[in-house]
Image 1 (tube, rainbow, N blue to C red):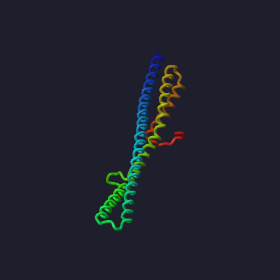
Image 2 (image 1 turned 60 degrees about the horizontal axis):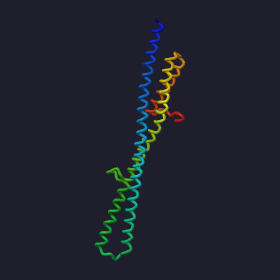
Image 3 (image 1 turned 45 degrees about the vertical axis):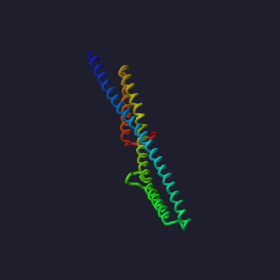
Image 4 (image 1 turned 135 degrees about the horizontal axis):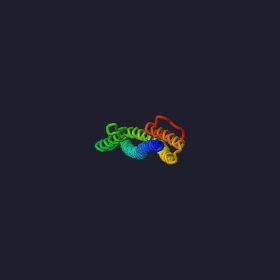
Length: 189
């Protein structure tokens, strides 16, 4: 009878332990999924921002070529009537203002300077998410193995197997924590 009571208590503790591991596994899966989503979102944002930067550069170059062409026209035609010279100079001024705005547009945050700054921020966010993901991946594997070994240990009543489960769970928990915080840098991650 005492064996049955002890056996029942051990099973309850094992069930509680396995339940805690399952919750930790769910939290780890959530972190891994979020890291993957953050990586993809920022990967796309980096690409989009650099594409926008390139488009600005192309437009800026085209405006510069147009302004240079008009300047050349003014220089090679000194006898041009004054109203035409004024109109051409107005266009040159308009192109020069646009060229300057393409370099930096703090008001809209869409100048080349601002776009490069945004792209660098997105790159940092992408790289951080990429560093987090392997910790979650390995933690999920270890926690799943810990759950299986705990279940086996409960069925075959071998304490050494439960000890292996606990060790795997501790390592998996550390990796989960590190996936969220990146507090430590482990080799091969």
